[in-house]
Image 1 (cartoon, rainbow, N blue to C red):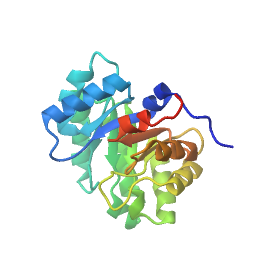
Image 2: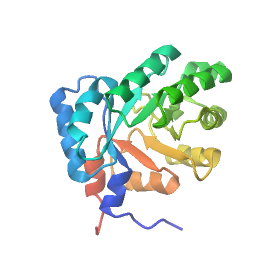
Image 3: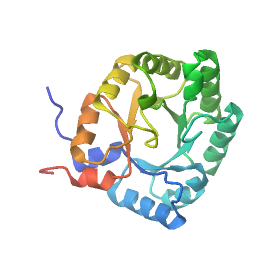
Length: 225
């Protein structure tokens, strides 16, 4: 049975309006925040160097500032990820999207990956933490293992993708992640979500949140709302 189509407001509330391009200027971030306020998105997702600016623009709106850390490769030293998380929180981030160390996962260094994520969760100081596992780089077995590590870490969401690797969110991956983490754990789908139909299909597959740069197009594409 298909889920009922959400209202514009309900769909917008699931969307994290995203701008992570390396050449994004301060004016681009200002425009992002203005759009987020107008559409009432959940918040904006930005690089950690833009958190302070985004926070200053959204402080009166109650929208969230989501900072990416260890982005986009996840290969930084654990202490670097922890410090970047602490700084982002100090500057006003309400949520952290951290990239898992994919290479160490493939090394089967479960203890090392888990320890790193627990450090980030601790540094986030009770804020929501989403762990990007870059599903396009993982086998099915590795996706399952990654989900278990995220569950054990104290994080709150598993996230599909950075959007900067060789693939993004897929229906099949979101369904698999939902099977792995259960009904109450968060899933964020991101990467390549450019239209309403894809967004609704990912929500139906189990995604709680969506990260997208095409957020306005997605909401505007709702039919009959």
